[in-house]
Image 1: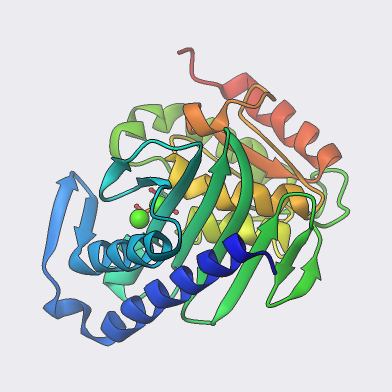
Image 2: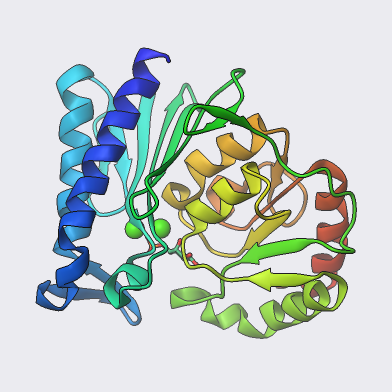
Length: 263
Ligand code: IPD
Ligand code: CA
Ligand code: CA
């Protein structure tokens, strides 16, 4: 395994340990609302500090874009970090959350790690090197259309509630044409599950770059495609993402298109 990926794995596992240490005591945590229905606990912050400290020990000059502490440093190497993806689940004891770490070099995603500390599942990818779950190669499914497909999503919340009407149109279109929709509550894990063939595809509006960076590389290295709702490559900026095997992605986009928000 490459040195950079190795450090990302070490950081993700350490953050996972922090999360697991608190999983049975969530009622004792100090939880603050960043905005309506958007909470952060000290566990998010401790896990993020652990990740940044682990990486800094080896790469003191690298920069960070982390959900809780924002942008730090200037470098062609930027670590994009979600220390706890699925905070709402974590705070409710709903066992579906993850740690997501990606390294972007000169604007290109090079390494990605998503770690599920409850199941101790480790998803990894390096550009050009494929995607793995616990060291074994993973692939997206070979599903070509919506018939029989299992699709992941996230419901709009926070500022994106304003797109609820459009989202419901999208939801209906996908629900009527597939075998089912899942809303697990951790976008990073949803993307890892697409890479592992556990979901055929995934879409969500209004995500942050830390929700998507590692998962995007995983899906691509597992043979899948990732675009925004227009079919182009600006999802890390727009926050709107669709991920699936190529032909299925075309079918998903066609269903979503009539419901796209005007802006
Ligand atoms: C959230 C999760 C959730 C998605 C939200 C994200 P957080 O991340 O990924 O599945 O629907 O849009 O913000 O806040 O728990 O890190
Ligand atoms: Ca997140
Ligand atoms: Ca988070």
